[in-house]
Image 1 (cartoon, rainbow, N blue to C red):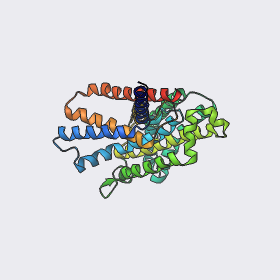
Image 2 (cartoon, rainbow, N blue to C red):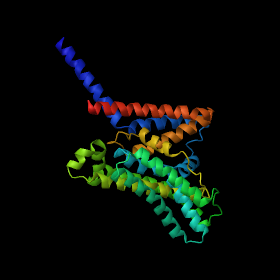
Image 3 (tube, helix red, strand yellow):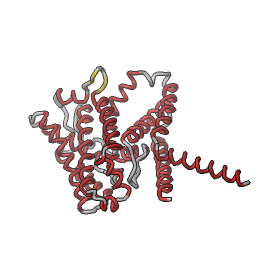
Image 4 (cartoon, rainbow, N blue to C red):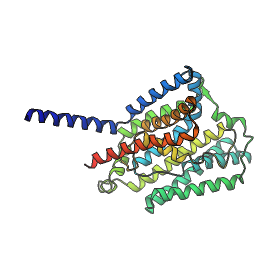
Length: 331
């Protein structure tokens, strides 16, 4: 009897450890889901989905957006998030396009576009790190400010007729592959390594897990959180410039409501709104899963009105997994 009880306990411990491992390491699960969805899409599309040309089209359309999840991941790890990223993307594109229309050089216009977006991140960090305002409220306010500035610059109308040298930013390829897709792969690989191995980056996890304890061991939590808001805004600005070039014009309503999609993709990828966990690769995989779900629904013939239901359900499952993971940590 005692032996059987011990065996049961050992099995329960093993199963709990397995579940805990799965909850912590979400990338393998995401890869499995991506493979399943890719197979479904391949069959539903008449075996055309995995065609190299189609995959290149997807990379061309979605790689710039995937870049945005990098900055958001950093913030989620520190227990912050940024609702202003989509407005920052629109603002940077609009500032750049307006300056070009005023015969400012392309290089200077691009720099000003990134600086304009980064300033929003600077003020986000100021409000959150220095004035201790909740990131939800602080970035909600700057989201409206950035969007309003974009409207003021544009006077409510898109700026089009962009020069070819600017448009080429969104069309340039290397051996037929969009340059920003290659950039995404390289940057994600490097930043993932640094996030796990570099001492300064590992401090982000300490901040998200227990900020007071991090302060007690000498970590300047306010400075690091501030920097991460600037980094997130700069990355969003960079992506905004690429997407503006790809669309051949700058619109004051560009990228509206995409900020929640990016945050949700990071949560699906394993980042936690409770802070202290997340990975760059996981967030990019989470974004890819969101994209493929939309494509699968279209190919299968499901009404686009159901996309919110499916996407919300996937996000709900990810949130439950996050809650269970946090519960096991505290327990």
